[in-house]
View: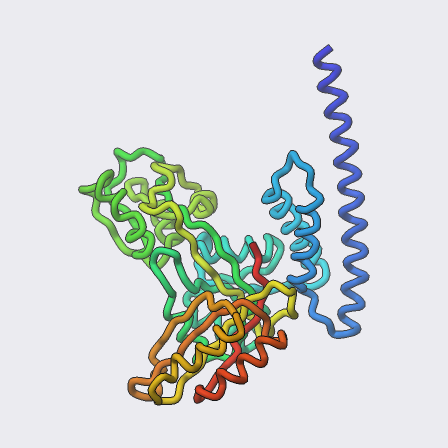
Length: 357
């Protein structure tokens, strides 16, 4: 009797799978027609605003048992695969494969884009500016370690925009080929990852020497080549390099997140829930910084970040980077920035982009 019930349920699933397959292909056919129209009218293929609306609506209608996060991931892949039918999207990111930046690129664009790892952040800016890649992905700040200042510096050298952002949780694991703690003689790590796991390492691996490498992915690669080597890296890297867990979640602070910028030559239209990034240099006058920020307060525009960097062109001159809620095309934002300009030598709009939860 139970076997008959199981058989019937499996047959029902098989029928549903065929319907899903049929509907997916039907969806793809319609998307290809849309792609033809976009080509004729020279409309960009990738539209994150439209994709956000699709996913948000599905999550709103979702009644379970799949969680909202699962629905988001599933349709991220469907949308990615559909976009790949319309146009190949080349996305460059700070490599190598298996880094958190690689993971951020997949989470933002899905698995069906043409992903290209590059050796450094500067190279990512270069290929985006030259149009060799449509998008780039670079880290901008970590909740524990602070701002990636080199990324900020690149905005002073390259004409690129911020197309979007993604924030992902960072979990570090101790990985090795065997997964056996007793066999570990050396540990490889990126300096930031090592710093974020300092207390755990001191307590649990006090006599094991630590070696710095260029990335957590490189650490995982080294661990995959030598049985006595362990790596501090991500679960994603463990999968890519065939490693086993020695210990999970060894970071000292569990609320650890990294924010990544999506780079492009353009920025998307307003969604009504956006963030804008600007940079500016100030006149050398008393109260200049106060005066430049006061218009935001007067307009009740929420500043979410302010950072300064040496301009590297004039002694003691600084460039200020500011993030705030709103889109560059919003009337209130335009009026506010006109007031800010009065106190600036130069002000540059780096990008306005959707805030994705």
